[in-house]
Image (cartoon, rainbow over all chains, first blue to last red; front, top):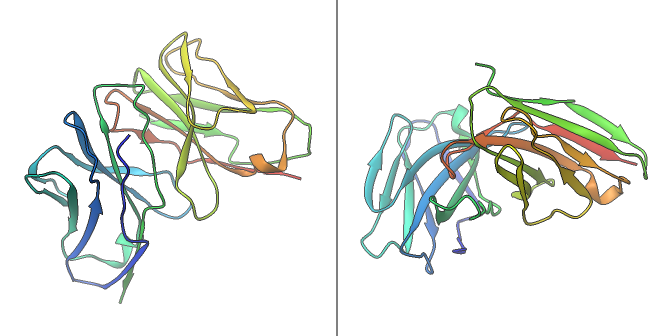
Length: 112
Length: 111
């Protein structure tokens, strides 16, 4: 499984764009990059997934450079309710035995 | 749809007791998972199932057992509870391996 490295914590203010970068230097050819969000006392929630270039949905954008050794989750115009832990995961989505590994994640604190 | 439901929400056990954490999903998902999350840490996979009758170990299976007799249900059994099993337990289900839907969790304390 590809190991991921992301900042332990980040602070931001309401209305700002937040970019959280995840490093995954040993990503494999079949691996996809997936991001989850977890609010206190809740289970994680799937945010976005991508393989290369850029993916956008109603919640976030995911930027993946050509070498795929890192990825950036972009949250536009954050609000207080975006305060959560964000997890970056890398793995082969075609293999059910390829376990998801949740590291420590990035604790995002959005301030008024 | 109720999604993924877990019972109980909270439980306190004495050392050596046993219990079953219940998990059910109504989305007809093939894959189901059990994770544990210790305070301030990420989630660790205990067991997973790719379909009824099929289960396999995850990263931290010791002290736990599972069964999957139906598509909907995936109970987690703790035998001989130990303080090290104090944690929050999350059940999840999916049809796409990495797009999992999580339940609200069960907070377990072993004293």
